[in-house]
Image (cartoon, rainbow, N blue to C red):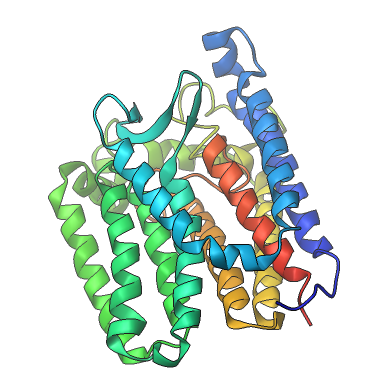
Length: 365
């Protein structure tokens, strides 16, 4: 393993800290009234978000100093551990149900979401596998079938919870990694067609997903049911205009828009800080993607390049899906906005993934 050449990428660090700052402020603003009514403490969610952010930043900095050789060694064990946790989640009486999905493990207030950590485990495993089989990545079996089967098994366990949003991010990231490793285009096109057919089957298999599709096409057909979230989100974004209504002045967060501090926090951001605030967040994500791809291009070996590519893809796919949902561009699916939405497992995992990027940035040419 080569020796590090540089300090960690300061642009990545700056963009992450800026996103975290915006996230903590917006979590407080979006949740203050609700958390005061429910817990008697308007800072209830904001304090926890700051705690998760501090823990995540600590782990990010710790991971940024680890020898990358350990990532290679722990790729397979981390995958099997996450498989075991995903299976454990599905055991009645063990997995915790929240928001209609059995996605959590924990005791009392402390809990983790194994599906979030599976996303990172799949990145590490596929980076290791595709590197060790680099000469055969253009074959159908070792370049497509085997890596896709591993990701597909994880996707199947996640869908049993069910959690289509997290599963979509996982499979999208796996597809990007397989493409970046050199898979043949004709195989990838066939994979896309198969994925579209499979997605259609998942939608048809669950009536509530069909309702989400119809609500996406015309939310006003059922404004108090399937179309409610999209309509209320657009009611938040529209009045924001260029400058917004002002920090803390959102109307939709007062029990109109469901989950304003989690899945729909971008709507509150656009309502209170306007196009300028929402645009700033999007620019910060774009900067993070730019620097992540820069790391992937400049690291000295394929394993590092695939990790950097996977982490960057995971973050941007999740951000695009979330922003697409809240702006009515995609059907509604429960998925958080990285770094901004409230959520311990999601925030901690994403910061750990950024720690990998910072680590690899030390080895860039």
